Image 1 (cartoon, rainbow, N blue to C red):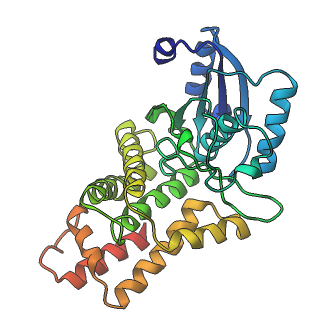
Image 2: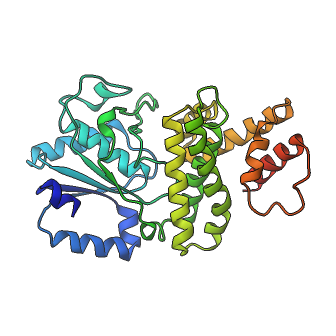
Image 3: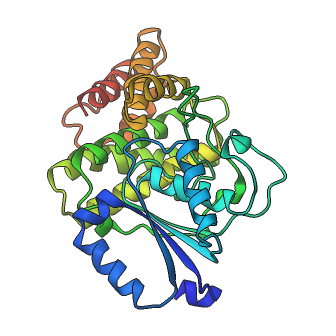
Amino acid sequence: NFLKEKNYKKVGLILDRNLYEKSSYVKKFLKQFKNKKILKKILYFDGINEPSYQCLDLVIKELKQKGNDKFDCLIAVGGGSTIDFAKGIATLLKNSGSSLKYRGFPKNLNSSIPIVAIPSTTGTGAELAYNAVFTDLKSKMKLGINTKNNYPILSILDPKVIINTPKDVILNSSLGALVRSIDTMFNKKSTKISIIFSENSFKLLFNNLPKVLKQRDNLNLLSNMQWGALLSVAALLNSSSGPAGAISYYLSTSHNIPQGLGYAIAAVFIFQRNHEKGYYEYSKLFDLIDNKSNKRNISIKQKSAFVIERLIKI
């Protein structure tokens, strides 16, 4: 209905291949979508980690050579890397030159092709953010293509898409979103508005993640995780992150550790160190945690320690 309202008649689909092969729900969607006669091209994203600038250039070159570079809209179904890949394609098809020319925060760009984002993970928040992560295979630098043209015009949170996502992918991406909800809350750029996003994100992710890992087919739990991830990015866009993000960058480019997992490992270490140095503000998260048993009448220091201990356990 949305595509019809916009009068989009030439649609490109960027689809996570692993998701497609494992999900009968996504296969059914694709079959129905093909019948609409507006699907011009399907591109499968095969990568495990973030896409590279070099891969993006090859795809753009192939699309232009075969005359498949005219789209009204791109739909991305998959994890953060798939959605980022779609953002890169949307930008490069409207702007000439190598993708490395646009790394970082490029200015004075032509408008990108509109994107519809349908995430298959519960962590990256690519369906809300304007960032698109890309790695230069030669220099090992990960600067991305970050422009407000990347904002999706529509995002769909469908928990049925996530059911077949591998457990480790759910865990890694969710951990990244969880620590992001904390990182964004306790930094100097947080505001009253961003803290509302951070608190609600933390509550949804912290209390539902252990349950999701045990009940993978529970749509309500999966939906809670999706909203928690989205709210963590809403918090980030209205505040800032902490030093763990820089460490996750190194772990990702140098050791191929998934960004969410690397972010979580670094963040928990930093939270623990802050607590040991006398920073007990993490106690503010205590009341957002379910199932605290008999821990209610304890000191601020003990509440802070309890939060960090539970984080480490997760």
